[in-house]
Length: 157
Image (cartoon, rainbow, N blue to C red; front, side, top):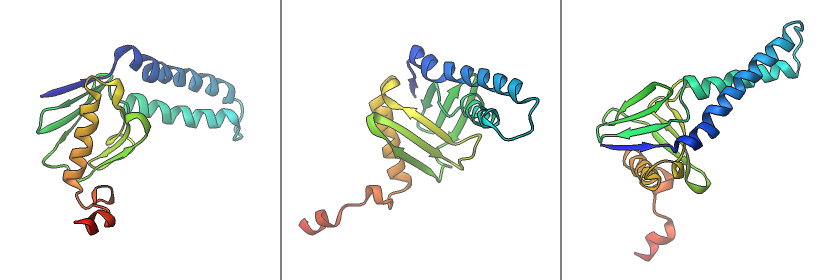
């Protein structure tokens, strides 16, 4: 069983504190928008902050801990856990960004479950985590363009 943990200080600064800031923006915007029924900047702030709060605290899109025991993959954050049995997972997509950042979609991704932003360098053994996600995606989706050999490399053989 392998456990990957986000650096606690960085997690607070990059996930928890912005989540609480969005709660503050929501409260402020509601208080300013309570008298007005028009669509204004406060209405936009309410919509954006609600989406951010759901991503942070409800759907745990930024997991604090990831546990991989070979049979099951678990994402932990704010006392909640999302579990996926790997033998039942038919959809596992990794969208890679610069510097080891990943947008992972697993299972049947919805607003509340299955979408995760993973900043691999911030986790213990982040490089191993990054490579294991790529390897798992390749195993589930071997025909993906991402993993096909290029035409030029086939001609050389």
